[in-house]
Image (cartoon, rainbow, N blue to C red; front, top):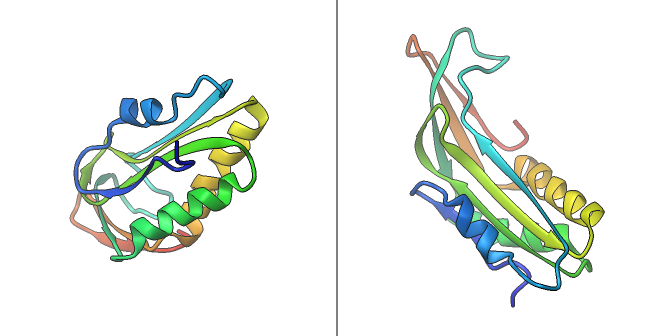
Length: 142
């Protein structure tokens, strides 16, 4: 099995169960996950957030795979990760990560590394829309 069976930029809703299934392996004793959802507020917003509109560079999927492989490094394990693009409402999943390794410490470490490097390095941008129609763009690192 490939160490990164899923690395996807998707315009469709993300399937959490598919990510867990992709890292299901009898040799792995720990599975961790992260699901990032659209929330109704942001510390930089003046009002309620109602929508996030994500867009991605054409190379984003290849970058996502490389980030997942780098996070795994030499650790035997599996990573399934997807980032959504398009218009997302409050509560929609924007990022799904599932990591399986032999032991829990590595699974937690790899999962955290994946989400932190996504936030810093994945060429995906979001346009945040507030209830009053105010918008703001956020990019790499934000």
